[in-house]
Image (cartoon, rainbow, N blue to C red; front, side, top):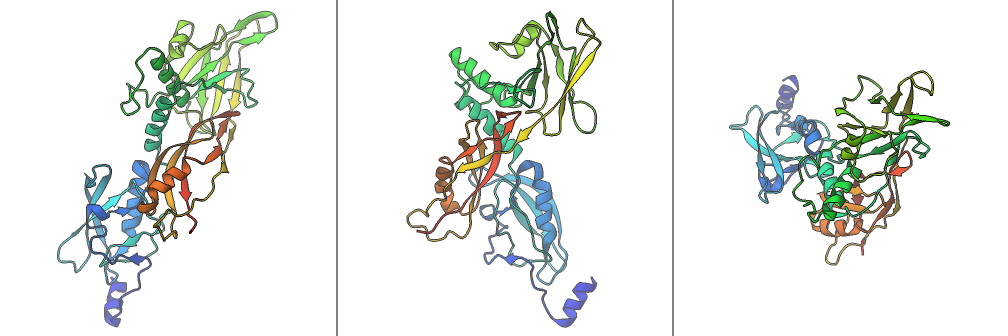
Length: 373
Protein backbone atom coordinates (compact mmCIF):
# COMPACT_ATOMS: atom_id res chain seq x y z
CA UNK A 1 0.00 0.00 0.00
CA UNK A 2 2.94 2.32 0.69
CA UNK A 3 4.22 1.84 -2.89
CA UNK A 4 0.75 2.55 -4.31
CA UNK A 5 0.37 5.68 -2.14
CA UNK A 6 3.77 6.95 -3.26
CA UNK A 7 2.89 6.38 -6.92
CA UNK A 8 -0.38 8.27 -6.56
CA UNK A 9 1.36 11.09 -4.67
CA UNK A 10 3.91 11.61 -7.41
CA UNK A 11 1.33 11.16 -10.15
CA UNK A 12 3.48 8.62 -11.95
CA UNK A 13 2.58 5.22 -13.36
CA UNK A 14 5.23 2.55 -12.71
CA UNK A 15 6.92 1.14 -15.77
CA UNK A 16 5.87 -2.40 -16.65
CA UNK A 17 8.51 -5.11 -16.39
CA UNK A 18 6.89 -7.01 -19.27
CA UNK A 19 5.27 -6.16 -22.57
CA UNK A 20 1.60 -5.16 -22.54
CA UNK A 21 -0.89 -6.26 -25.18
CA UNK A 22 -2.36 -3.66 -27.50
CA UNK A 23 -5.44 -5.77 -28.23
CA UNK A 24 -8.29 -5.77 -25.72
CA UNK A 25 -9.07 -9.38 -26.73
CA UNK A 26 -5.74 -10.73 -25.49
CA UNK A 27 -6.31 -13.03 -22.47
CA UNK A 28 -9.97 -11.96 -22.17
CA UNK A 29 -11.26 -14.19 -24.98
CA UNK A 30 -10.84 -17.89 -25.66
CA UNK A 31 -9.45 -17.15 -29.11
CA UNK A 32 -6.58 -15.17 -27.57
CA UNK A 33 -5.79 -17.14 -24.42
CA UNK A 34 -2.45 -16.61 -22.67
CA UNK A 35 -0.17 -19.47 -23.73
CA UNK A 36 1.82 -20.38 -20.60
CA UNK A 37 2.54 -24.00 -21.67
CA UNK A 38 3.65 -26.87 -19.46
CA UNK A 39 0.77 -29.31 -19.73
CA UNK A 40 -1.24 -30.84 -16.91
CA UNK A 41 1.73 -31.59 -14.65
CA UNK A 42 3.09 -28.03 -14.30
CA UNK A 43 0.02 -26.01 -15.28
CA UNK A 44 -0.79 -24.74 -11.77
CA UNK A 45 2.73 -23.46 -11.06
CA UNK A 46 3.13 -21.82 -14.48
CA UNK A 47 -0.26 -20.12 -14.33
CA UNK A 48 0.50 -18.80 -10.83
CA UNK A 49 3.84 -17.48 -12.06
CA UNK A 50 2.13 -15.53 -14.82
CA UNK A 51 -0.68 -14.19 -12.64
CA UNK A 52 1.62 -13.30 -9.73
CA UNK A 53 3.61 -11.04 -12.04
CA UNK A 54 0.55 -8.97 -12.98
CA UNK A 55 -0.35 -5.61 -11.44
CA UNK A 56 -3.04 -3.04 -12.13
CA UNK A 57 -2.35 -0.04 -14.38
CA UNK A 58 -1.00 1.96 -11.42
CA UNK A 59 0.84 -0.92 -9.80
CA UNK A 60 -2.12 -2.18 -7.76
CA UNK A 61 -1.82 -5.73 -6.41
CA UNK A 62 -3.87 -8.27 -8.32
CA UNK A 63 -6.15 -10.87 -6.79
CA UNK A 64 -7.26 -13.92 -8.74
CA UNK A 65 -9.06 -17.22 -8.41
CA UNK A 66 -9.52 -20.09 -10.80
CA UNK A 67 -13.16 -20.62 -11.76
CA UNK A 68 -13.29 -23.57 -14.15
CA UNK A 69 -11.89 -25.16 -17.29
CA UNK A 70 -13.45 -24.69 -20.72
CA UNK A 71 -12.82 -25.89 -24.25
CA UNK A 72 -11.18 -23.60 -26.79
CA UNK A 73 -13.31 -22.64 -29.81
CA UNK A 74 -11.75 -25.44 -31.88
CA UNK A 75 -12.61 -27.92 -29.08
CA UNK A 76 -9.00 -29.21 -29.12
CA UNK A 77 -7.53 -27.41 -26.10
CA UNK A 78 -8.63 -27.06 -22.48
CA UNK A 79 -8.38 -23.50 -21.12
CA UNK A 80 -8.40 -22.40 -17.49
CA UNK A 81 -10.68 -19.44 -16.67
CA UNK A 82 -9.67 -17.02 -13.91
CA UNK A 83 -11.47 -14.16 -12.20
CA UNK A 84 -9.02 -11.27 -11.75
CA UNK A 85 -9.44 -7.97 -9.90
CA UNK A 86 -7.41 -5.14 -8.37
CA UNK A 87 -8.26 -2.09 -6.21
CA UNK A 88 -10.14 0.51 -8.23
CA UNK A 89 -11.49 -1.95 -10.82
CA UNK A 90 -15.28 -1.59 -11.07
CA UNK A 91 -15.91 -5.29 -11.73
CA UNK A 92 -13.67 -8.36 -12.09
CA UNK A 93 -12.16 -9.35 -15.41
CA UNK A 94 -12.02 -12.91 -16.71
CA UNK A 95 -8.79 -14.22 -18.21
CA UNK A 96 -8.22 -17.45 -20.17
CA UNK A 97 -4.92 -19.34 -19.81
CA UNK A 98 -3.71 -22.12 -22.10
CA UNK A 99 -1.35 -24.68 -20.54
CA UNK A 100 -0.94 -26.72 -23.73
CA UNK A 101 0.69 -24.08 -25.92
CA UNK A 102 3.57 -21.75 -25.20
CA UNK A 103 4.36 -18.19 -26.27
CA UNK A 104 7.97 -17.16 -25.72
CA UNK A 105 6.96 -13.47 -25.71
CA UNK A 106 4.38 -13.45 -22.93
CA UNK A 107 2.80 -10.12 -22.12
CA UNK A 108 0.27 -8.62 -19.75
CA UNK A 109 -3.35 -8.07 -20.84
CA UNK A 110 -4.26 -4.56 -21.95
CA UNK A 111 -4.82 -2.35 -18.90
CA UNK A 112 -2.37 -4.35 -16.72
CA UNK A 113 1.32 -4.02 -15.95
CA UNK A 114 3.94 -6.41 -14.57
CA UNK A 115 5.79 -5.93 -11.30
CA UNK A 116 8.52 -8.35 -12.39
CA UNK A 117 9.44 -10.07 -15.67
CA UNK A 118 7.16 -13.05 -16.28
CA UNK A 119 10.15 -15.26 -16.97
CA UNK A 120 8.45 -18.48 -18.04
CA UNK A 121 11.01 -20.64 -19.80
CA UNK A 122 9.98 -23.09 -22.54
CA UNK A 123 8.21 -26.01 -20.88
CA UNK A 124 9.59 -29.55 -20.68
CA UNK A 125 7.78 -32.32 -22.58
CA UNK A 126 4.27 -32.95 -21.30
CA UNK A 127 4.38 -36.49 -19.83
CA UNK A 128 0.68 -37.17 -20.48
CA UNK A 129 1.01 -36.11 -24.12
CA UNK A 130 4.15 -38.24 -24.34
CA UNK A 131 2.34 -41.26 -22.86
CA UNK A 132 -0.41 -41.11 -25.48
CA UNK A 133 2.11 -40.49 -28.27
CA UNK A 134 4.22 -43.47 -27.18
CA UNK A 135 1.20 -45.76 -27.40
CA UNK A 136 0.31 -44.44 -30.87
CA UNK A 137 3.89 -44.95 -32.05
CA UNK A 138 3.93 -48.52 -30.72
CA UNK A 139 0.70 -49.34 -32.55
CA UNK A 140 1.54 -47.54 -35.80
CA UNK A 141 4.99 -49.14 -36.01
CA UNK A 142 4.11 -52.30 -34.12
CA UNK A 143 5.22 -54.87 -36.68
CA UNK A 144 8.79 -54.73 -35.34
CA UNK A 145 11.03 -56.88 -33.17
CA UNK A 146 12.78 -54.66 -30.62
CA UNK A 147 15.22 -56.55 -28.37
CA UNK A 148 14.77 -56.08 -24.61
CA UNK A 149 17.08 -53.92 -22.48
CA UNK A 150 19.96 -55.56 -20.64
CA UNK A 151 19.88 -55.53 -16.85
CA UNK A 152 23.66 -55.16 -16.95
CA UNK A 153 25.34 -51.88 -17.86
CA UNK A 154 27.72 -53.66 -20.25
CA UNK A 155 24.78 -54.86 -22.35
CA UNK A 156 25.53 -58.53 -21.67
CA UNK A 157 22.11 -59.40 -20.13
CA UNK A 158 23.96 -61.77 -17.77
CA UNK A 159 21.44 -61.17 -14.98
CA UNK A 160 18.38 -60.66 -17.15
CA UNK A 161 16.50 -58.08 -19.16
CA UNK A 162 14.03 -55.19 -18.91
CA UNK A 163 10.99 -54.89 -21.16
CA UNK A 164 9.95 -51.26 -20.85
CA UNK A 165 6.46 -49.94 -21.52
CA UNK A 166 7.10 -49.14 -25.19
CA UNK A 167 8.54 -52.58 -25.89
CA UNK A 168 5.53 -54.19 -24.21
CA UNK A 169 3.14 -52.04 -26.25
CA UNK A 170 4.99 -52.93 -29.46
CA UNK A 171 4.72 -56.63 -28.62
CA UNK A 172 0.98 -56.28 -27.94
CA UNK A 173 0.54 -54.47 -31.25
CA UNK A 174 2.47 -57.14 -33.14
CA UNK A 175 0.43 -59.96 -31.56
CA UNK A 176 -2.77 -58.10 -32.43
CA UNK A 177 -1.66 -57.79 -36.07
CA UNK A 178 -0.87 -61.52 -36.16
CA UNK A 179 -4.32 -62.36 -34.78
CA UNK A 180 -6.05 -60.25 -37.42
CA UNK A 181 -7.36 -57.70 -34.91
CA UNK A 182 -4.89 -54.79 -35.06
CA UNK A 183 -5.05 -52.20 -32.32
CA UNK A 184 -6.45 -48.76 -33.03
CA UNK A 185 -3.87 -46.06 -32.17
CA UNK A 186 -6.69 -43.62 -31.39
CA UNK A 187 -8.59 -46.01 -29.14
CA UNK A 188 -6.31 -47.49 -26.44
CA UNK A 189 -7.15 -51.07 -25.54
CA UNK A 190 -7.57 -51.63 -21.80
CA UNK A 191 -4.55 -50.56 -19.78
CA UNK A 192 -2.22 -50.76 -22.78
CA UNK A 193 -1.33 -47.07 -22.45
CA UNK A 194 -0.23 -47.30 -18.81
CA UNK A 195 1.14 -50.84 -18.50
CA UNK A 196 4.33 -51.00 -16.47
CA UNK A 197 7.75 -52.35 -17.27
CA UNK A 198 8.71 -55.99 -16.71
CA UNK A 199 12.01 -57.02 -15.17
CA UNK A 200 13.13 -60.57 -15.98
CA UNK A 201 15.79 -62.17 -13.77
CA UNK A 202 17.66 -65.04 -15.40
CA UNK A 203 18.61 -68.03 -13.23
CA UNK A 204 21.99 -67.95 -11.45
CA UNK A 205 24.47 -70.43 -12.90
CA UNK A 206 27.28 -72.05 -10.94
CA UNK A 207 29.42 -74.08 -13.27
CA UNK A 208 27.94 -77.53 -13.85
CA UNK A 209 25.47 -77.22 -10.98
CA UNK A 210 21.74 -76.75 -11.65
CA UNK A 211 20.79 -73.10 -12.20
CA UNK A 212 19.06 -71.27 -9.34
CA UNK A 213 15.98 -69.12 -9.94
CA UNK A 214 15.72 -65.69 -8.33
CA UNK A 215 13.61 -65.38 -5.19
CA UNK A 216 13.06 -61.62 -5.32
CA UNK A 217 13.22 -58.67 -7.73
CA UNK A 218 13.20 -55.14 -6.34
CA UNK A 219 13.51 -51.66 -7.80
CA UNK A 220 15.37 -49.56 -5.24
CA UNK A 221 15.21 -45.73 -5.48
CA UNK A 222 17.99 -43.62 -3.92
CA UNK A 223 15.59 -42.69 -1.12
CA UNK A 224 12.46 -44.27 0.25
CA UNK A 225 11.07 -47.81 0.08
CA UNK A 226 11.36 -50.14 -2.93
CA UNK A 227 8.84 -49.66 -5.75
CA UNK A 228 5.80 -51.82 -5.11
CA UNK A 229 5.46 -54.77 -7.48
CA UNK A 230 2.28 -55.18 -9.57
CA UNK A 231 0.66 -58.47 -8.57
CA UNK A 232 2.98 -61.31 -7.62
CA UNK A 233 6.42 -62.47 -8.67
CA UNK A 234 5.89 -64.53 -11.82
CA UNK A 235 7.45 -67.96 -12.29
CA UNK A 236 6.91 -70.81 -14.76
CA UNK A 237 3.85 -70.34 -16.98
CA UNK A 238 3.06 -66.99 -15.36
CA UNK A 239 6.21 -65.56 -17.00
CA UNK A 240 4.96 -66.71 -20.41
CA UNK A 241 1.63 -64.98 -19.76
CA UNK A 242 3.41 -61.73 -18.96
CA UNK A 243 5.63 -61.98 -22.02
CA UNK A 244 3.87 -64.19 -24.60
CA UNK A 245 5.97 -65.67 -27.41
CA UNK A 246 9.20 -64.47 -25.83
CA UNK A 247 12.21 -66.79 -25.65
CA UNK A 248 13.63 -66.78 -22.10
CA UNK A 249 15.98 -69.19 -20.30
CA UNK A 250 14.19 -71.91 -18.28
CA UNK A 251 13.86 -70.86 -14.65
CA UNK A 252 13.49 -67.16 -15.44
CA UNK A 253 11.46 -65.09 -12.96
CA UNK A 254 9.63 -61.86 -13.83
CA UNK A 255 8.04 -58.92 -12.04
CA UNK A 256 5.95 -56.01 -13.30
CA UNK A 257 6.44 -52.51 -11.87
CA UNK A 258 4.28 -49.39 -12.37
CA UNK A 259 7.05 -47.50 -14.16
CA UNK A 260 7.69 -46.77 -17.82
CA UNK A 261 11.27 -47.93 -17.27
CA UNK A 262 13.80 -47.67 -14.42
CA UNK A 263 14.64 -44.11 -13.44
CA UNK A 264 18.27 -42.99 -13.78
CA UNK A 265 19.04 -43.25 -10.05
CA UNK A 266 17.22 -46.57 -9.53
CA UNK A 267 19.02 -49.81 -8.73
CA UNK A 268 17.50 -53.20 -9.58
CA UNK A 269 18.23 -55.80 -6.93
CA UNK A 270 17.96 -59.52 -7.67
CA UNK A 271 17.85 -61.84 -4.66
CA UNK A 272 18.80 -65.52 -4.87
CA UNK A 273 18.09 -68.17 -2.22
CA UNK A 274 20.65 -70.38 -0.55
CA UNK A 275 21.46 -73.23 -2.90
CA UNK A 276 24.16 -75.47 -4.27
CA UNK A 277 25.75 -72.24 -5.54
CA UNK A 278 26.35 -71.21 -1.93
CA UNK A 279 24.65 -69.02 0.69
CA UNK A 280 21.87 -66.59 -0.17
CA UNK A 281 23.15 -63.60 -2.10
CA UNK A 282 21.95 -60.72 -4.22
CA UNK A 283 23.03 -58.67 -7.21
CA UNK A 284 22.60 -54.87 -7.17
CA UNK A 285 22.46 -53.54 -10.72
CA UNK A 286 22.66 -49.77 -11.35
CA UNK A 287 21.23 -48.21 -14.48
CA UNK A 288 23.39 -46.44 -17.08
CA UNK A 289 21.63 -43.82 -19.19
CA UNK A 290 23.19 -42.13 -22.22
CA UNK A 291 21.62 -38.96 -23.59
CA UNK A 292 20.58 -38.71 -27.21
CA UNK A 293 22.06 -36.12 -29.55
CA UNK A 294 21.09 -34.50 -32.85
CA UNK A 295 22.64 -35.99 -35.99
CA UNK A 296 21.01 -34.23 -38.92
CA UNK A 297 18.81 -31.23 -38.06
CA UNK A 298 19.22 -28.63 -40.83
CA UNK A 299 17.43 -25.31 -40.40
CA UNK A 300 14.58 -24.88 -42.90
CA UNK A 301 14.07 -21.90 -45.20
CA UNK A 302 11.00 -19.72 -44.72
CA UNK A 303 8.07 -20.91 -46.86
CA UNK A 304 6.95 -18.77 -49.79
CA UNK A 305 4.96 -15.75 -48.65
CA UNK A 306 6.40 -15.77 -45.11
CA UNK A 307 8.57 -12.78 -44.24
CA UNK A 308 9.21 -13.09 -40.49
CA UNK A 309 11.55 -15.58 -38.85
CA UNK A 310 12.33 -13.80 -35.57
CA UNK A 311 10.73 -16.47 -33.35
CA UNK A 312 11.18 -20.26 -33.39
CA UNK A 313 8.39 -22.81 -33.57
CA UNK A 314 8.28 -25.17 -30.58
CA UNK A 315 7.17 -28.78 -31.09
CA UNK A 316 6.98 -31.83 -28.84
CA UNK A 317 8.20 -35.06 -30.41
CA UNK A 318 9.15 -38.64 -29.69
CA UNK A 319 12.61 -39.89 -30.60
CA UNK A 320 12.12 -43.47 -31.80
CA UNK A 321 14.59 -46.29 -31.10
CA UNK A 322 15.99 -45.86 -34.62
CA UNK A 323 16.67 -42.15 -34.03
CA UNK A 324 13.84 -40.90 -36.24
CA UNK A 325 11.57 -38.08 -35.07
CA UNK A 326 7.96 -39.22 -34.63
CA UNK A 327 4.61 -38.02 -33.24
CA UNK A 328 5.24 -34.31 -33.77
CA UNK A 329 2.84 -31.87 -32.05
CA UNK A 330 2.83 -28.08 -32.31
CA UNK A 331 3.34 -26.38 -28.94
CA UNK A 332 4.20 -22.74 -29.60
CA UNK A 333 5.63 -20.04 -31.82
CA UNK A 334 4.18 -18.59 -35.05
CA UNK A 335 1.10 -20.60 -35.98
CA UNK A 336 1.62 -19.70 -39.63
CA UNK A 337 4.89 -21.68 -39.59
CA UNK A 338 3.62 -24.67 -37.60
CA UNK A 339 2.88 -26.92 -40.61
CA UNK A 340 6.28 -26.21 -42.16
CA UNK A 341 8.01 -26.82 -38.82
CA UNK A 342 6.25 -30.16 -38.34
CA UNK A 343 7.19 -31.28 -41.84
CA UNK A 344 10.79 -30.20 -41.21
CA UNK A 345 11.38 -32.10 -37.95
CA UNK A 346 9.88 -35.28 -39.38
CA UNK A 347 12.93 -35.35 -41.61
CA UNK A 348 15.44 -34.80 -38.82
CA UNK A 349 17.47 -37.66 -37.36
CA UNK A 350 19.11 -38.15 -33.99
CA UNK A 351 21.08 -40.68 -32.02
CA UNK A 352 18.50 -41.99 -29.53
CA UNK A 353 18.97 -42.04 -25.80
CA UNK A 354 20.08 -45.40 -24.40
CA UNK A 355 19.64 -47.44 -21.26
CA UNK A 356 22.41 -49.95 -20.61
CA UNK A 357 23.35 -49.64 -24.27
CA UNK A 358 19.83 -50.26 -25.65
CA UNK A 359 17.95 -47.46 -27.46
CA UNK A 360 14.82 -46.15 -25.77
CA UNK A 361 11.91 -43.99 -26.93
CA UNK A 362 12.08 -40.54 -25.33
CA UNK A 363 9.99 -37.37 -25.57
CA UNK A 364 11.71 -34.09 -26.43
CA UNK A 365 10.96 -30.45 -27.12
CA UNK A 366 12.49 -29.13 -30.33
CA UNK A 367 12.83 -25.57 -31.55
CA UNK A 368 12.66 -24.95 -35.29
CA UNK A 369 14.33 -21.72 -36.44
CA UNK A 370 13.71 -20.70 -40.03
CA UNK A 371 16.30 -19.09 -42.27
CA UNK A 372 15.20 -16.08 -44.34
CA UNK A 373 14.96 -16.53 -48.09
